Length: 46
Image (tube, rainbow, N blue to C red; front, top):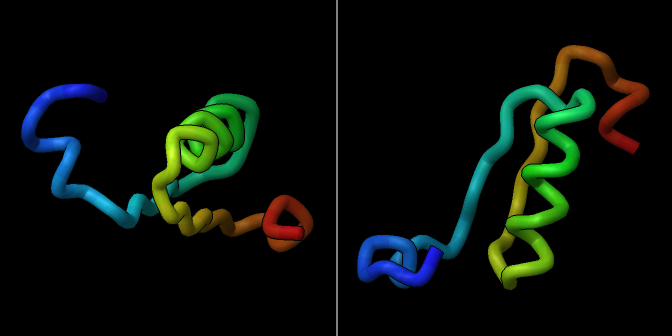
């Protein structure tokens, strides 16, 4: 995530917040990105 293109990205959307998507969203958030999560299961959005 240290290349030039990623320095311009500020917002990331993760589609699917299962085991993999939730971990990815958390990792991006920990790196300082603003993350939006989308899932068809509303329980996973809380």
